[in-house]
Length: 260
Image 1 (cartoon, rainbow, N blue to C red):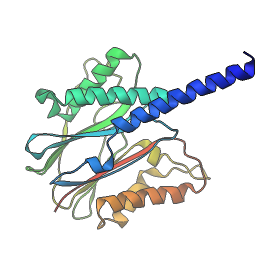
Image 2: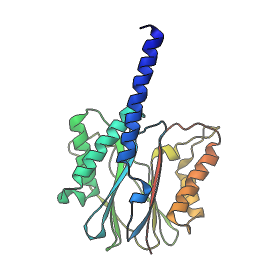
Image 3: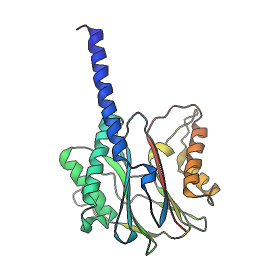
Image 4: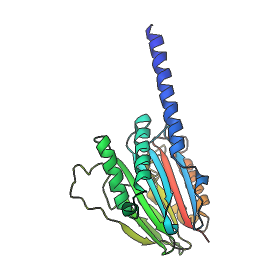
């Protein structure tokens, strides 16, 4: 076999591996239509930088109408990042079966971090976990190194869900770290937007970043629109901002609002 044939063989093997990873990721990430709730409307958008990526989201319905939601961003791109997201999926699904853990977003993240660290050393990722309680009108969250999530209140005021934990994967170096949840009211008319840093870090020709400020500006401008339209407006604004600049990272956006 000559060098050309060797190269073609390697390319063919890589393409098969990439196709496998792509099909796997399609199966583990919920489709937008799979989220059906009596209490909330849901929006999701996911655009990998390559055919597969490190951005991931998932949700679980819980007792008493509660909903658990997770968005994560694994370091790297391609097959390696896709493998990490599949591990996050498995750990999250298993963790949600433990009633003593699944009520607390920070404990959910702690368990996922522990599971993955036991299998792969020096694996780092950011994530935000939420538990929504429609009966009490409360949102519990833990933000581990993610960009600020944006909560648009019914009075059009903006509140930011800032990180309260470091990037996950650092547990091995910070054994005394305290995991804790944040609590915020989330009731009729409120809308929540979560996104990965591929959105706010997107750059235009002048190397300016799209930024959190531009995201919040779009949200304020369309505050009276339903959550799915706000999400679409954010994507459109980002595309207009970048113009013809190629993508440099995965982009994931989640939105949720209280149903009437």
